[in-house]
Image (cartoon, rainbow, N blue to C red; front, side, top):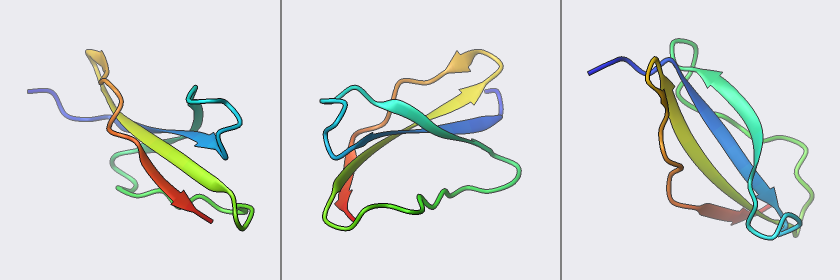
Length: 69
């Protein structure tokens, strides 16, 4: 089993992309295991997905997690 090198965080802000998620951030797994989205607009619904990356490539995206800012 290969170690995870990084995580990719994708988002769909307020359904603007209609379910097409775009890359928000890449997190080095040796630096942190979390990401905090900042400057979100209150009352907007944000959806997020995460993938893991290693020497083989990028994993499938996680289940969608959503939250109102």
